[in-house]
Length: 351
Image (cartoon, rainbow, N blue to C red; front, top):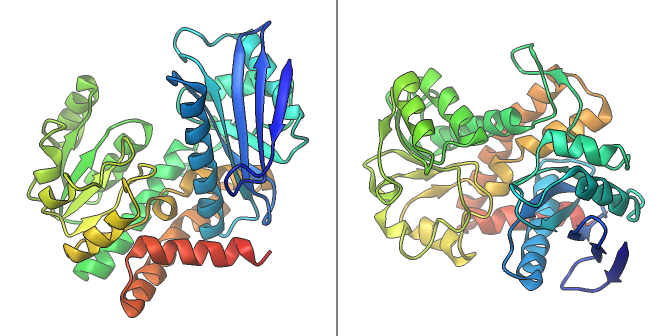
């Protein structure tokens, strides 16, 4: 196993490259900031076109985790790891064992969790080699039933709380009954969010590349199916991006009819300036790493041995965090994403 460390890449504390010819593992771990604690972040497996593309992704994602943990009030830093390869054809136990041994090299400065292209089962295999893995323990769900370490339910519930805060602030409403909501993406988080919204009485317009997921939402949640290209322009109150990043851009923002953008996707703004563009259009934006922090909160609670009641309290706290953020942004006449960045930086730079 060949391991190469590089320091002072961008603003990151440590970036480590690994190549294990025996298993075929090619991976990168990026540790952005550990001033609040060990860097916690998902391990992603993706078919990157090049090592440089993988590097840029892991640098961007690890930085985002620092901000997310800080805004969630967690004693954790930000990190991320990526495995270069097709998760459907290149993944095997030997590779995952090698990744676990690679994690040991960081001596606990980075803690891995599941992410795109990896599962709880994959992380359990890594954990056979390394103690620096989280999100793999069975625990009570919010409904009281046992679930595996998948943090998706908590991400969805936290996003639901944040969306409620946006409705309270922008529309002066305490309920969602009859509100029209466009949900872009019905994956593990997006579909669960849609369930919460439907239960609260909202009317849903949904899209996803998985037609079966859309069909299920139509049949079980009473949703209206629209094509991915039409989701932005729906006559709705709220747009909830829950799929890919960079969906808020020069082309999509002018199409929005919604007064609120509040969803679970990461890196929703194509560029920081698009936060100001949303503001200029009179659209309230719930910054992604604030509203979708439920997953990292879930894993942090697991690491601390806290029960589901405490987890529920933390997730519900996203509501007040966003209300405070919205109020400060209005007072300072700044876009919400800029204020979120300032609040997070204040929290991790003083430690």
